[in-house]
Image 1 (cartoon, rainbow, N blue to C red):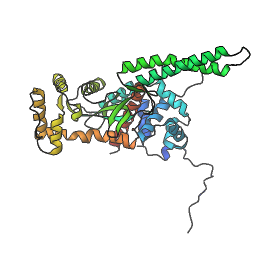
Image 2: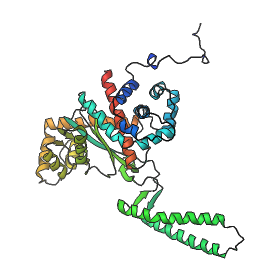
Image 3: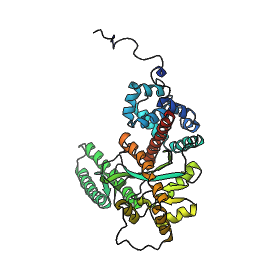
Image 4: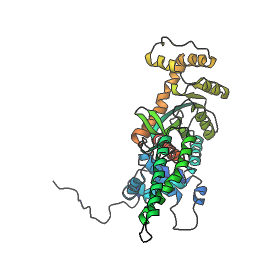
Amino acid sequence: MPFQEYSPEQAALLPLHVRDVLSEKHLVFLISAVVEKQDLSTWEAAYGEEGQRPYHPALLLKVLLYGFALGVRSSRKMEQRIREDLGFRYLAGGAEPDHKTICEFQRRHGRRVNDLFTAVLEQLQAAGLGKLGVVALDSTRVKANASRERVMTAAGLRAERARKRRQVRQWQRELSALDGDENPGGLVAELERVQQRLREIPGQLQQLRKSGQQRLSRTDADSRFLHSREGFILGYTAEAAVGEDGMIVAARVTQAVNDLASLVPLVDEVERRCRQRPQKVLADAGFYSNQNVEAMEERGVELYVPDSVLAREFKQGRPVRGAMRISHAGLKRMRRRLRSPAGRKLYERRKGLIEPVFGTLKEHRGMRRFYRRGLEGVNAEFLLMALAFNLTRLHALQSC
């Protein structure tokens, strides 16, 4: 049987142009087109005249969005894919930025990602997407880039301070007992290191008091110990609002341990980004409070959020025995609304709107752990993931 010619050492393995291999509808062309439409003047202005000529922000932004869309969030893996992957090579224009450049780009432009997410969302809405007739809210816990074992507590810091002070006093006595001819260089350096640590401890104690927490991570002090399905984790709470066409219309990261205080700010975030209020809001029982019901009624937003008793009733398929008698008028209206056939049918859409979004981000794109540290850093990382998700959603709708 004659085989086709095979010669991996031939001079040209690649086509003359990437479009000869990738379809015209490939995701890379959509990402490139969307980024080219953005005003990146503030991104460009962030660079000075000194030093080596930097890569253009559009190049690194396209690479980041494509990487996040594929679940490639590690800067080292992106560096490798830029050398080996045709789509990455196209977006990089043949350049080869290393992982340090990619990390520095994210650090430098973290706050600008917020405006970029809003700008792209406005363009999507102008095209008829990101509809706010029905908006579903939810949150998920995401691990921080820190070890839960390396924590600081007030008692631990005080004990450490006492030990360090004893060490300092002992070493000072040893230094004073040395003859003038002896070289105490190593001991002096160690003493300076311990004294520097002693100067840091009061600041950490103050930071601990201000946080209101009993323990904080030494690696990422903004992270919190949160309850999740996996037990208690050290991480953050990622919150999102999804429109009726599956687009993320608001996204943010908080330190909240539960969702009670998140409903109103998240609805306000939708209004701020989209410049209009959602008509109907769906959320699970974790977001319910009488105050939230009152706040949404004041705003003219139709809320569909069951209280814990009604959520159990839905789950069991029958009324809950022994439930307390209710007197709050807003709660009574909420229960009537959700028990009606139309209300129950509408509320059942919540799972189909929001849960696939978090499922995609966590299961397929690796958002079980943040790579950045600090609340500002992880918020920018989550917004990039949300923006990349919207672009892949747009790509899917255009490909239908």
